[in-house]
Length: 485
Image 1 (cartoon, rainbow, N blue to C red):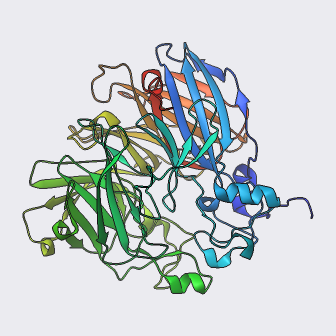
Image 2: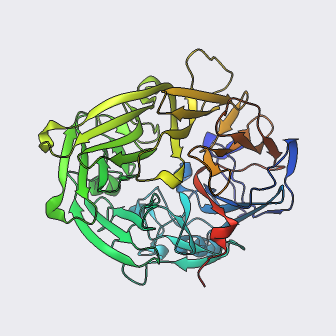
Image 3: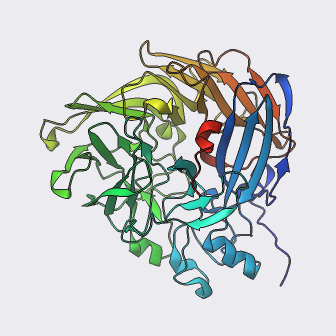
């Protein structure tokens, strides 16, 4: 068998080249400022990194193996660790010393030797609930990870109570009850329109399950949860078995379809769902959501067309970057109005961006502070492309404050960390991993959340690249002390 050779394509060269290294690094170098000594906890992230050259010759990053990373903060020091998630897929390919799984979420393209084996990658998010750390991707159950060693502990189906074949990588957490609210789409298998909605109590036991049928099969990547409602955004990034059998990409943008918001009371049943319909548009991640008992508000970046250039447009239209610009907007639903009344949309900022986050202590509740990665700021022309700014939004004043990460930089999802246990909303720090594309390595910026435009509180320099990644979360030392056995 020949040694691995990756394709000479943009997805596998330069800064995008697979890392393929599991690392341990004590005391990441601090090259500017000082790491706040009172920060005591761990920033967990997960990235997508192909361990083997793609089976079909080229691939997209979404199809990369999950690698969990930890940045442990203690007494002004930061230690770094990274480990691949040993999913069933990863283990099978490591044994074969080659890729066995084909195109993104298309089992028809796999090597026959892995027929029926779980294809999950655990490469989208890493989160904590009931003393357990999970790595997750929305096509399979989450995978438990040891929070100290990052060792893979195995898939978790909540003691068999997870009946869906899939589980979101974007669960929501109710700060008043400690419940985790989550769901699975394509819950009966790839390209099915089924949604399974769950709530788990503070001890991790599933206490509610409801199954719904969406208006059509699509990517339901994120959803919104408030004190009284859950909201399932069905956006026309559609899927079909026929496309998979033809070897075409799993998802495609359908500009002829409308958007639906499936609104369901918390712990409601299928008979209670109401589908509020509006014209075609694209959205992916939720910054925050809340309700006043009647009116429901969901904040999300919205664009005219799909953000993803590797998923085709069913109309045949070419990819148009101007139409994919996402602007943070507020969707408002009158839950006492008939579904055919739709919902309203109000733009909240003229900064284009994605990966929105909030002060997670206010999830499901009214909030005013949020942050996101930005790729266009009015009046600023900078070298390079992609996400180069961190943008903080104050919904009380409408002001957006930005921090420019540098020329030819790549800003990952920013994350909020409270300054202390009793910190006010938005009082704390923003952590942002930044790729230095021309230097082929990465930094970690620590910004003052109340003034992200100021010079960083600290800049940590990694001697290596941190690969393309999506999401992560902060766990305080106090939370980690309550880990489950």
